[in-house]
Image (tube, rainbow, N blue to C red; front, side, top):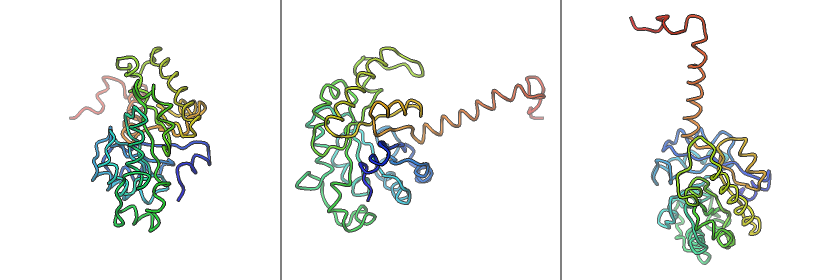
Length: 274
């Protein structure tokens, strides 16, 4: 089985997309758009464990690594998701090396960790009888650094043994550092300044520890810039964001174009019900 690090080694980076809608049909479509990784978002998405498992069933046929993002460090949630076939866990709001160690422990079998083993779990069915033996090397673990406290501890977090990488959460981190909500859709010099400094610190910490730095980007142009800065795990969009933005672009495109067409201006009476 090709692991995340092997995929990173091929191009120097991987592209990740979030699935937030609790829809196996949407997950099936999304997983076939060229992503290296697709992450089921249990933090900001609208799915639970049962919904995630149904989505994993259709994702198994696609050439993506199935990851999950969870809202907090919860071994009781991590274990069932791994048993269901998840090959990567990204945990929100990790703020210390001890929390990162606990996260790694929840994702590893004894003696390296505290994950409970079941030979009847779905992961063993889809990945074969060698799954239990190799699971610790197949499963990736990312700690999200998205607070002032987490950033101050990022070097210690990145140095935790077996951790795959650090995932930086820019918006939450900016709120934590500045004490206010960043403005939506406009440039904010203060936000740009603190995020720029945080990106440098996260990338340096990951590079020095030999782990992968991850982040999200709002578009492909900024995504390329993130890769140039040293990030190797790049999230570009979610299914909900892709649906909303593309749909709006289509609608707005027609709304702007139609008034300029002959016979479609205001007052023509066309389109009025009789």
